[in-house]
Length: 66
Image (cartoon, rainbow, N blue to C red):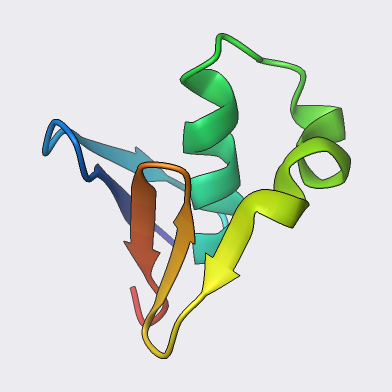
């Protein structure tokens, strides 16, 4: 599964191969140069907001249906 994550501030797009929720967490963490993927969920899940059709974490969003 490919997920497109968009940075709301810059419009930049990134592609991840995971769930949309995991993708926005990864984009958010990597924006702080955090590459320790094993701890992403533990560290950043609390910042995720689930909408009707999107997941948002910080400045990043992904559509649920992608």
